[in-house]
Image (cartoon, rainbow, N blue to C red; front, side):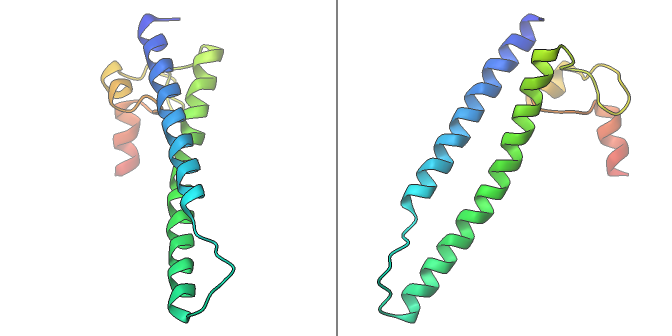
Length: 111
């Protein structure tokens, strides 16, 4: 395994732990009180749940990307573009360590 990839693996594992910790904190701060005296309180709870679910969906997607990148590191295919099979530039991996595409394929996807 390349030295850079070992560093990427450590970075990905740290990011994964941070996201999991953030999601756990968010979940514990939700107020699902069973006593709703006012419609306003019910509305606040609904809004809070909606916000949590939005954040959770986004963070779950990020966790999936991180886990996929960690699997690629483990099987030796990390740093290889999933579209064209060429190497993903180190600059791209430094910015976006869970990247699946090289710069050229990312740009083609925007057009």
